[in-house]
Length: 426
Ligand SMILES: Nc1nc2c(c(=O)[nH]1)N[C@H]1C(S)=C(S)[C@@H](COP(=O)(O)OP(=O)(O)OC[C@H]3O[C@@H](n4cnc5c(N)ncnc54)[C@H](O)[C@@H]3O)O[C@H]1N2
Ligand code: MOO
Image (cartoon, rainbow, N blue to C red; front, side, top):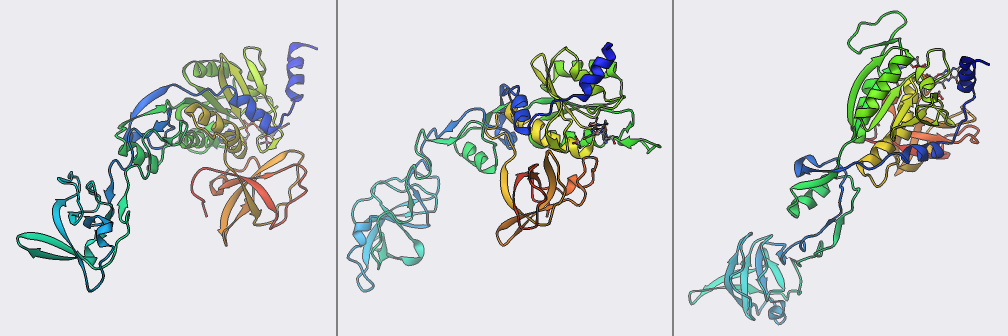
């Protein structure tokens, strides 16, 4: 058997591994990237690199929840509609001011919502249930109902005690987290660097998006899709275009891309065809092939290799398989590089919205639309979900996991789904 036959032989005898195993193999090489500081306004959507502990109690002072009067509740215990209690108003505390005096029995302070409650006060009464009187050059507030201690005061440290953990490392920063960071004066936020991800497509049939259609050719739709997916996952996409089915060219392109990027994602050329160069490339002994067949559909030919410690993910050229391959393998790798605590797509339970009759020896990841009815989630499989189909990717909120042993699913059956990022398409 000559060398070429030997290579061909290997090409056809691929050892398929389970999705979980394939994920574990790639994730092992996904090391969290270094830390950088970004301005608070640019930290949304990044992953926190260090935990945030409250540097001070929040709120930092006993805070009035109403416009009204700070009082001592015990002063009001004997009052009623006929016998109001008269409290002398000794201070006026707008928001942002510091009280000028402590309250002593028989006194009150006019106070605004959000202002610091004076020492000695243990309740705030809202202005609407009070009456004011001036007598002997002094101002009094009259109350006709006993007040409960603690009412309308948010005590210092009510939300957070000093030193308490508020945001763990690995948290995806969203609007609420920004509020916490801002409230604690953290204007520069420590996050993990975004991975730089090189993307290129292989295929002599590929046209650039701006090229006119030509016989036998297709426009390269996978590269822009991958660019969007990388960005959605939090990575920095570096577009390296498309190359023809030329092994030499692919080899040098991969080499160059791996040197200057954190991850390389390719699409196309991973099957067993005469021009499936990526498949041939990863079988060369210049690196370690992690797998070149996975027991899944679409995307059974998804291939991964490591060179110089860096990952090459060679996704299928079939658009549906490229999409699913990205979600199952590239996404968790990017998430881990970003420092995410939960790298995998969330797994939910849903009811089948319609029958799904296709069976397979491999686990299927069926594109589906989600609908929420009466508080339950229903998954509607896409009408056409073949690996080669592009058009239903856009209608997918999730991937229904159809295990190989499921011999067809009926509407109403409970299934596991992988929720895709983003809003429910509806
Ligand atoms: N004899 C066999 N043939 C095939 C097998 C097999 O096991 N034995 N596997 C099939 C499966 S499953 C898949 S999936 C595909 C995978 O093929 P490749 O990943 O090598 O992809 P290509 O052959 O390069 O292209 C497939 C298809 O997708 C179109 N394509 C490719 N790149 C792009 C792009 N960037 N944008 C849009 N469309 C793209 C391409 O034109 C082809 O139509 O192989 C089966 N065959
Ligand atoms: O690998 Mo193919 O995507 O299984 O259909």
